[in-house]
Image 1 (cartoon, rainbow, N blue to C red):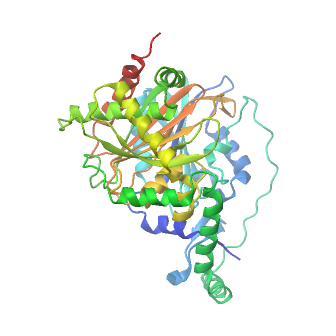
Image 2 (tube, helix red, strand yellow):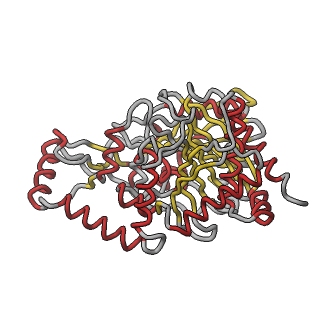
Image 3 (cartoon, rainbow, N blue to C red):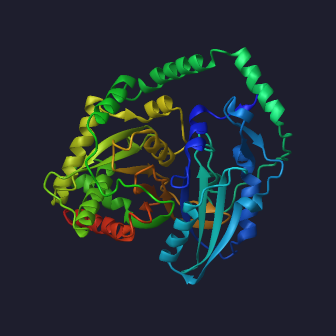
Length: 458
């Protein structure tokens, strides 16, 4: 039987347009090793590990007449050098120049006639650094166990693990007639496929979600939120095809110190910091901010630092509150109320009822944002705990990692947050027209961290 796309994966391909490309990205910054790191080395590293991510050699082929969902087939003309590309900044390249390049790269949709991914080696960065920028369509990384190219090239040691011995030979590409015949055969053999799939998904949902919050509590939260639209915000506008990208940095120990001093969680501290930054940003724009002003975030996050369990919450950020500690307590109270009352949408609920299971919370946040009505939230915030040990690619140590979360329709800003090796890294992906000052907002994130840290006794 053909490897057919799931219903949701197919819908992301159909609904993608020039203003909302459906790829998730990452910007990894490396220190160039003494042994060097060039384009040929990156190509070789990716080529030898593609067997760990088989979909990266496969393309999407539609069924004539759309008699069934598209299928994954081996690309007989697969060329790794088409997907792995080289770019350079004028030396010495600045961080701002890198961010401008990332924005341009993320604005471009992927080529649907080929496997749906791209990797860019960016050379010329100041201070002996290089960057690797990844773009992967969400249809490619649709399963919790599906690896992403940025993952498979990384090692826990400067000495790369042994290459995986594999000889890849593409299977023959099916003809249009064969695709139609397969679709007809499936319809004849399984006329009740839609009903069966729905029943199976529902049963899986019950079994999975009982371990977290309970499926009915998760669905009830979505219904309650739908009945209470998000407040008006300059972040909810018609967006353009072009993007801006900015970053902010913090230390994980700072958020842990805030947790020890004021309670709550590291996630609460991140949301409180973003609340403060968004407050200052609104004021800088001359927006009216009162004591009761809020901004709703859809925030898929880990439930506990030591587990892989996750939940997606709708959280009203207290951007009207001037006191950073009070903002933190507001956020902590809201998150605690979600968890204690079951008023949360468990990530597994989203996975089953919207038909997807992405490998990272960043992809989960992007997909969930696209699945929900634009009336429900103002901004997406994905927070992914990462490894607290250094990682390497072909001997080059990764020193920073910034996520790039795609925008949903009428959403001018997405914020991805990743912790790695003691740092906390914020990637702000924004619409170019609506957010000409996204770099200002990024600076305000770092100022908000300092403000909150100023409340912690030495």
